[in-house]
Image (tube, rainbow, N blue to C red; front, top):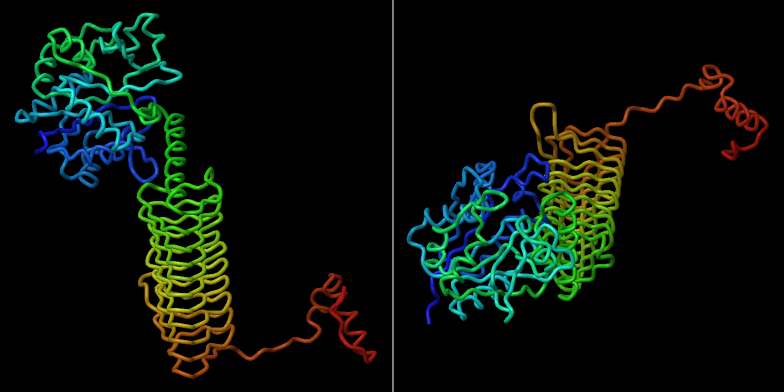
Length: 485
């Protein structure tokens, strides 16, 4: 049997004054998506024929975001926020052809699961109801609308806290702000809404009382996890939601075979992907489209943004943005991989190394204290400590190529554009600005000159001069110069 038509309406017009932010509340980020992005993701598996997002405060910003994350969604402007009922009425006026089930979601409930949305719809449609509300039992219902049931336990009405009596405020079953409606029944009830309430707004929740009064079945679906219904009004609540989402994501990955050594300090975006037997150590963040393959070890103290870590690689105390780390490669500690970095199999980027737009072949090594920018380094090449790839002359960025199995000595500057051909050597301390042919040694050292007794003459009275005088005296006596203190 074919599915009845479905429409999703997401309410995302509010300013969120308590966030005290120039960013609309629904655009605040939370582990890889915005608040509204999480809601849209939860709604997607419901298979709606149409998704409408009601926008208002800084509508242009919200619409621009929708164009990126949900281009099929239709934004509808609520220029004046006159309540949730008014918002839904505007949505339906923009889509007069809508029939079947209308699902209404608040745009600030990022913990909502797709399974719960689907179960709400199923309960609503199987019961042939005019309206169904998602509810939850919470310990502290302060600030939330209450579910009022009759003596038989059926839904009687939904009451906003501002309009609730002391008796109703004692109820702990709350309205999650998530609903399923029959489209025709909803249109009928919306036309009867009034603004006779504490806020002078059209409440969507009044639809339930209106429908019940004319005999339309209304019902409640209780969320399996009350945390799913939590919204966000300020930065403190956003932080609480972030921690809950972190715990949910980490638990799911651990149950999928990933080792997370300290879940409380590990933050993984919902957009990241990990394979079984990957290991994530403490104080690590996997952000954006990051992927970590089986057997890889990430952390401690590592941040990966839109980066790929190959099987068996080890990434220690590293910050990586848009890098590709090959299988069995090693990175860190205290390395910075910038966009365009690609490490081959068993390549090594060691301590205090920065790379940008740099490709290291299989087994290539940059072990210590170096900058590698705009470079191609061949397989099994070795770059000595303190090497600088001088890629920028103030106007143009140029490329450096180091061939297969080449060896670059410590404290070297490779001045681009330049090529060190396969098997070539560069002597330590050189500044190379001409190509070094295969098998050759490139050297640019000036001859060393020692100015004798300079310290004893020019730095007399210093500890250095005193040490030199003692060493010279011992040497004059036929002994060896000692470096001992």
